[in-house]
Length: 306
Image (cartoon, rainbow, N blue to C red):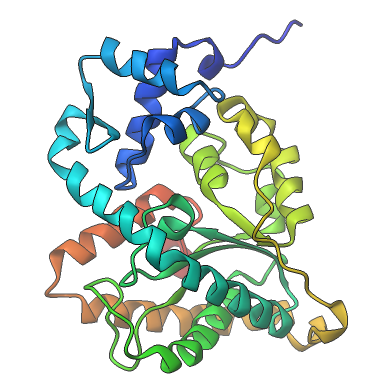
């Protein structure tokens, strides 16, 4: 049997650019022609090719030096403002995140890989945002990992109570700062149930900081991800940290049998946070959207609690 190129690689440049813009739009982001070309679905294209595609595609336009759909043109100014804030705000939070991850993996030996996700990885971070982390953990430890991130995150946030907040990051005791965005068990990654372009894009936009070999192993085990974004094969490693195995707590302290209790504790905490947002429909809608994009990997869905 002859295996041909993936659909993403056979589409026209205009179609690939259009679909990449749509992927970004669903996440509330947009990019300029040069960076968009580097992240294009089906493989990188030149800035000039992106500009040509915009000119040839009626539903796309350039606004505030960003490639957006015409329906998003009114939001381009706000997105550009985020990109400008990223340049000034991100360096501090990248250093802070590296320090947090180093402490986290030292205390939680069942965490095998950590990547920065969300706005801090995508180039649209501002100081009122939280830092999203994607984790790969040992089997039977998803909820333990969730509790570990949130407990350590709360302790960390107590030292940053003057941090700017918005409706998504405001919390009663301390701001929402370090959070778990996606937690996968190792067996869920080999193979991934989802290997669509949205999942591939999530992996592409992630910035691995710990467990690079584990992250790369997921990419190798799911070649369809590379069909969507060949760029995954040569991701950035500039944020990687080292973790001295001798400083990590022994794994036997965290048996998988604890995951049930962690699930109940984590669920109660998560539902309480949603209750505190009950009068903030935009925040609730954003949470619902993010969870929808992560299924079937979301924690604390009804099926997860049975």
